[in-house]
Structures are given as C-alpha cells and as structure tokens.
Length: 523
Ligand SMILES: [Zn+2]
Image (cartoon, rainbow, N blue to C red; front, side, top):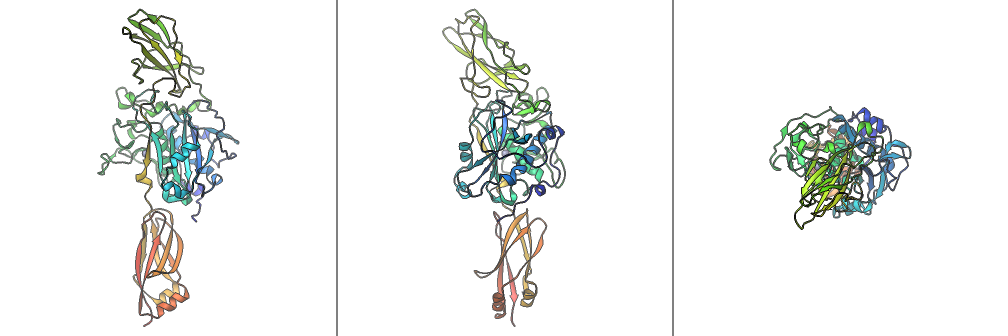
C-alpha cells in the first residue's frame, strides 16, 4: 500500500505563522487523548470551529498518525487570517494536554471508501456530528486514497452586511471537509502552505465567502483574481479569464495565496466607506473569528431586551437600549421593522414605526456585541400598544429559532472538484530498440516522472502476458528505473529475432502511459 509521508516532510518549508496564533496553539506534535465525542468547549455558546478527524471503515483509525497534521494545517490557516488582520479563527481548543492543542473529535464513518463513490460522505458526516447552530465543523476525511482528494464547504447566499448574516447566525452547523489519504493525506501532494490555503478556503466558504455580488465573483462561491485563497475559477466559467492583481505570498517550496486579494471581495478589517465590503457581508465581522487579544477567554453573548416606550395609536416607539453584554457593551442593533422575517438595517436602539389600523406588526431587534455575537428579541405592536410592554427574547444566541428572521437561504455545498479531483500526469520514456544482451546485462530501463509525488506500477508485457512488474516512487524529477525480466522470459526472447514488449504505467487516478520496446533477440 501507499507509504505514509511523515508530517515533518509534508510540512517542509515555512507555513504561515503569526506570533499571536503561536501563543494560542502549540507548534509541535499534537498532544492529547483521542476523543470520540465533543468535550465541553471553553467557548461555551460562542460560535467556534470544531476540527474533526473522520475515517472510512476500511481505512481504520489513524488519528495517531495524523493528529499533528490536523493541528498544523488548521493552525496555519488561522495564522493566515491573523497575518492580514487583528483576528483569527475561533477554534475549539483544549485537549487533555491543555488549551494549546485543538479539541479534535474522531468520527468513524459507517462505510468503506468504495461506498462513497455512490453515497455522500457529507450525509454520513452530518449524521454523526450533532447539528449545533454556532458550531461549524472542519472535517478531515481519511479515505486512505490520494485520488479521492476533494473538498467542500457549505455556503449560504446572503450578502447582508450585519452580524445577522446567515453565515454568522446559521440555523444549522456548517460543514467544511477535505478528503485525502495515503501518501497524499494532508499536504504531501501539494506544498504544505497550499494545503493550508485549501483548509482556509473551505472554512471561509462556511463563513460566507464569496457572495455573488462581490466585485470579482466568478460563480460557485469563487472569484477570478490571481492570486487569492478563494479564487480559482475564471470570470465566465469557461474561458480562461483571470485578473492578476496579487502575487503569491511566500516562496518555494511553500508558496501561498493572499487572503482576499485587494481586500475587496470578502475580507477587509477596515473597509472604506462606500466600498463593497462596507455595505455587504465582510467575513472580518464573523463571530467565528476572535480578536487576537481576546481569543484566550470565552466571550459572553449579549442579552437583547425590547420594550415599548411610547404609543399613541398611530405610531409606536420601541427601545432595545436596555440590552446588555456581560463582557462589554452592545455595539450595534440590527432591525427587522416590517415583520417580513428579514433584517432591514442597522440603526439606533430606539425606533418608531407607524401602526396601521387593525393590523399588528412584528418587530425584531438583534443586539450585536464587540465579538459579533448576537442576541435577538421580538415584540408585536399595534394601535393598542402602550408603554411598558416587553418583547420576548429569542432562544439561543445563535439560532434563528423563536420566530427571529431565519437564514436567507439554505446552505449549499460548494464542491471543489476542479482543482483536486484530477489525478497525476505520468511520463515514461524508453529506448525504442534494445538488444537482448543489454536487457540481460542491466534489465529494461525506463525514465519515469509524475506531475506530483505518486507511486507508480510499471509493468512489462508481451501481448497480454505480464513479464515483470514493479512499483516505483515517482515525482517531478524524472528518474531511471530498471525492470529485470525473469530467466524464462529472457529465454523466450532469445528464441525470436525480435520481440515487441509493452512497458506500461499505472498509478491511482492517472491515465496509463504505454511505450513499446523492440528487443532484438537471437539472430
Ligand atoms: Zn471553494
């Protein structure tokens, strides 16, 4: 079977790193007892990202091998956010070794790898991880096979700019997953930093990137700028139109893509007034991120209170000013004033609405604190409303339950097929004509290469009969390989003037390459 490439080799070269993230998560090997359920989170009810290791039933539990890689790549993704801002991903931390390690949960999938060619691994993942609004999952799926490399993140269409965005108040858990396995599991197939970018890419989908209204949107929640963590599809989806506005950050062997090239499509710590991100969903405002100076303590959610403060039969004034936040202050209020279940605007704590004769109207406020945590309260008003009436609080700070406006649309899964599903390309060169004496003396020689590190089976056949087969490691740098033919095959070659042999390659996911060699035998 394929050899496991140690993390140390996969991570060869510099990964994105940031001192504040180093202070949160250890850089060395993972430490902690393997967990099969979620331990209570230090973040309590605050939104956070939970890392999961899942394995197909015929692969077996290899958490011991990959625990360090999971932490390494997740940490690198978090560091990239911290490099471009004063925030990072709020990760579920805390193993039995302490808070410097991720709280990773192991999940045994119900089926062997082969079953997932026809069934959805996401369905299986979802059925085994509790749906808890406010908990988003980052799942590393161990399929034991490099060819199945694929990834996906759930994404909802909602470009509204407030903390009430469907990506920030998801009615359900969001799932990002990456499939891998074998030698290619977690980074050895790509430069380590590219894999870290891949991890970040899927997580950013779950946080709401990239909306169709974004300036460089190119379909499928992606964009068309080179280079950008979220961009890889051309503008119109078919012709090769990319804008090269940014360069790769970092250098060989670990180049990486910038987080939101130009800071104009999905992430900007401080968008200019009037710019796209000032008026649309900006992932910087996600509650799934924490401010670096505050990541180490669990944030407390605000409490929303809504009460009628004036009413004269024609209009009603409501106030959310007594809303509070135990570890700070309410920073903003977002209102649904027309009762259509969609938040309309951010605005002051006090609002006056006209009440139509004989009609009741439902008002909802979302109180948002400095951590972008949200609490909601709802009240129904009509021409009989009088001061002193109080509204009801929404249940749960991060659920859309209790009648508060729900997520704008059901999340979709963005499957990253284009980039990752492609197999390696193999190269094979042989000398077209050799003598039997040469084959006897030094075997059949070929030059072997591959577009990425992969194991290749090289077979020598005479018509359909296999004379020799051997497995070689191949990579970008071509190498000479030698196949020795058994004595019986050499005797057969000696009986004929010339014999045509076929040299053939096979590697997981790769197209077969065949070359003919004419061996001049007796005569
Ligand atoms: Zn994507």
